[in-house]
Image (cartoon, rainbow, N blue to C red; front, side, top):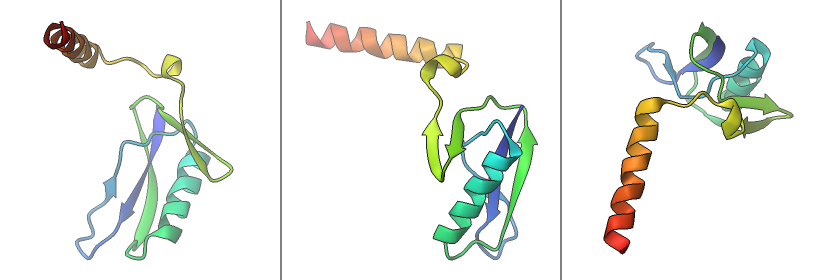
Length: 93
């Protein structure tokens, strides 16, 4: 479980977010409030609970990616990365 910040930034009324996922509602709220202060067009903010893995923390107004060891790997992405590495090795040799 994690918390994702979302904003409405135009007249459509549609909520928009990004890939940031926080361990606590407080972190997500602090992050989205900071974003609201930097963007002029933000009309509203909210924090939504979701099942995505936590990938960032927000401490002292700083966005910090979690160490790679704490992020759940995605097997399909691992396979793509391995293939890219093999392709690079074949073109260098």
